[in-house]
Length: 359
Image (cartoon, rainbow, N blue to C red; front, side, top):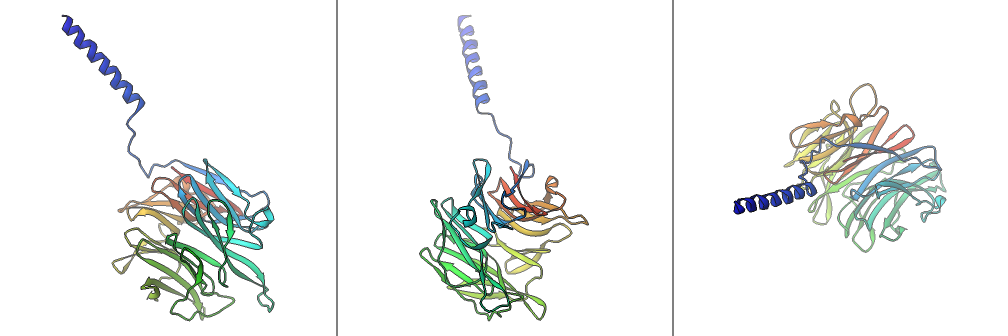
């Protein structure tokens, strides 16, 4: 009888310890990317009645940058950390380090101490028209300070991408193309004569790639018609790989596996050298795509229909899913960044900038 009592006493102790361990370390339910909780922040600026946030990038889900333009202070910069957004005083009109009439068009980086922002600075033209030019602007954060980077002469920069801190590309208007090699920013060229047209400047709209490949999208007008060129960087030079490109293209995105996406009113996917329709305007008029793989990506833009409303969609490799709670009337979403689980989307409602955060 004593042995039996001892057995049940030991069993009771193990049961209590097991239940206690389960209570302290409960088994978490599997993560469902299509069951996110969404919050919305309004990035109102005290010195401006009109703002526009157009680009976003993060080193992690708690270190995210959003950039754009405003009517008074011009270039505006926000940083998300400690679960809230902070207005970075970047313009000299705010007491910041960057002088002039500035706008920000894109942001990209490699970690929290290595962040690039490109855009333009308004400069008077001594021989108008036009009255002024949008000249190149490139700034960098090294973890201590924001610095106006010395570059060759050039015009407004619209896109940044790189596959390492020692290999970063910047593209913009009138064929302006720069490369940073880890030491300095140098001017680069492409095998195409780009016309200098004041009213319709040719623009490097987008640069993207993966660890081994870099592609770039050039857009311009000739005789009132839009022309697109796709260029690939091979053997230390740019090569035109497609000159009959798709109209309405806005941006490019390349997955880690090397599949290239042309994002626009109709979005195409290039796989094995062949283009196929991936997403059309009946589903989403897309502005940007970002993701961790071809089977886990997000697209943002405008939902179809007669009423303008923003939309965020997820692709899992087989079908598209729309987050209905993000379809806000009057909104347009311009950019998205994700670490694969949390998602940040920037856009505007009228003259007001917003950020959606799904997690």
